[in-house]
Length: 312
Length: 271
Ligand SMILES: Nc1ncnc2c1ncn2[C@@H]1O[C@H](COP(=O)(O)OP(=O)(O)OP(=O)(O)O)[C@@H](O)[C@H]1O
Ligand SMILES: [Mg+2]
Image (cartoon, rainbow over all chains, first blue to last red):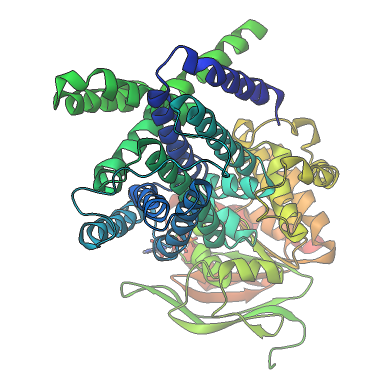
């Protein structure tokens, strides 16, 4: 691991470890779930250059799966979360096989269409509980021993899940596989001409991203003891795009920062009702127009520039 | 197998239509193993399209392509590369935000078989750094190894592209205008490089610079409007009236290069 990055990640982990002493843990858990979701999404857009506009299908469907298996089938919590993640990975494989050959905007449109199919399936299917969703999902003791009914304890479980997912993504980006992904993002025809079957690489990245989005959604269902249609809507797919762009796509910490900003806004501006959407829209437009690289990307560029001028 | 023994690549009746327009029309091309073969012709003649067809980046409308006696007409482009037929691009193709060592390593990495290993650290690739540096050194880029590709001047990018291509140790190299946009000293450096790497492989190249073609190439195929106009050694082709006509007929820039070509004809026949 690059020493700069490992310092940054350690600092983040340390800050998150003490955070619940200052900030409401349920809010923090929400941030962590969405941050993991955004990090998983960023693996695709930031490192493969694929814009998926249907990632809610992995996030939201995994929430249903973990909620249903834990509540109705009596799965232990950890198995329920794992089930949500695996189902999302499988869904990712199917969606990926259909979408991966399309380029650019067509890829986004195909993923959106597939996500809408999943949405309608969730509306129709019995097990999702329709408009009510799946409610009061039990917080069964983790591994049979760790009591997670207490928000404070659960927070550390969620933090562990987030960090695990985050490290998987970090490793993926900095692996032999990640090198090929970057090559494909930088110059796809060239990668092909060097003998890489780029579709296979994109597909694996897509499945990894889907699985980790599923992990995030499944965890969220346990935290809020609730799985609803909200998490499979196209608006949710848009929200994760927003978080990633605001934070800075293709940066390690950007999606986390973006998720924190958007969730905080939604929480603290909730009193303004529908206006939250307008404010989000304004932020989105401002980011796209003025801070192309997102918050983290801009700070990184500023620091790099400062370092550059310091050297001269 | 019914191709001639000594040709490494052969096309038969190769044709490509773009919405009714024939960019490549019934081209029968044979490239002799071990030669440096030039594909020349005025702008829009269909040279790049031919390259795209041979490397399977485009699917031919009709015709067949054989590589080492094997029909590759339906083969996927990545598989063509794996067979040992590797191309460069007319517009320099590097991985701009990767550094030079990483650029070359991408090519070296695939045969290692760990390219799907997302759980391994990047450091598993460092065993390739030595070979990557050797290749960079061979094209005169070792002092720039730490830079990212985007920071290189144009001529050096082409050299990096050649180093990356060579990393695959291809049997047949397709170079699309490797000298385009280069300064004079870069041209002679890359010429020398191409001559050097041609020792144990075959090269098919598109090149507009006639003195380079005269100097380097054993065999020349002239394309015009998608069709083969002439074929042979430089001295034969450059005297062909149809060839002179084709170059004259396409305006100032090409007329100049045709003039340049006849000026260099003697130089070409020395060797
Ligand atoms: N994808 C495409 N769609 C439609 N027409 C194309 C396409 N690619 C090439 N053409 C046309 O085919 C003809 C041949 O193009 P090509 O690029 O092969 O020429 P070239 O010989 O490489 O020329 P240059 O010396 O300018 O590179 C041109 O008229 C071009 O406009
Ligand atoms: Mg061309």
